[in-house]
Length: 235
Image 1: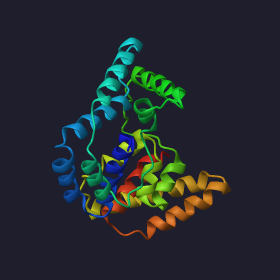
Image 2 (image 1 turned 90 degrees about the horizontal axis):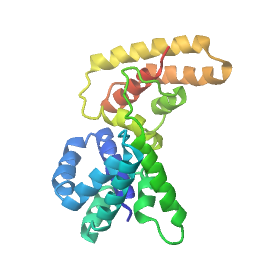
Image 3 (image 1 turned 180 degrees about the horizontal axis):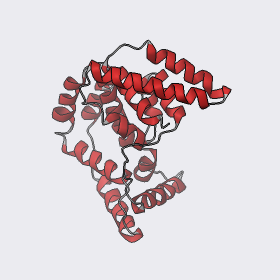
């Protein structure tokens, strides 16, 4: 199995664990059972490295991609270890968040252009400047409304890497009911302002979201969704 799929499963499992209030248990499994495996740990690091923007010049970026490609060829996860991960992540969304990197490492002779295109895209990404996250990050309102209304695991899988990291970074927070109510009140106020300024097409969605939030009770899952909605509604 391609490691990009494995990494996606692991990441989505940890998100689901938080929603199901089993994060402590599954984080222990991740650290003790998965990261203790040197091959898994190294592949995990390599994939994270190739996902980042590093401001590298083109020649160095190409050398890095070539060197890591050679290294990956020498790394192998045993069938038993892979089966352990598949058993642990059973029922988790499987969509691959690392298709480009998988195409680089697992390209085949039938589609050589995929490997070349993957290398080109990764090199260009490594050459970009790192994104500086602002305290008030503007996320499209359509994305925010999806988080407010949909299943959070599915929604997270559909976000881009940067937005998903924003959500996952809140996983270890221990919000209080008072914090929830404060954000809830502020979010409703933002929605009301947007409702008064929006056209009919989006106004109905905003009204539905407002009504849903008003009836929402405090728990950690709802706190994550509400916090992301609040951050994205710039008025």
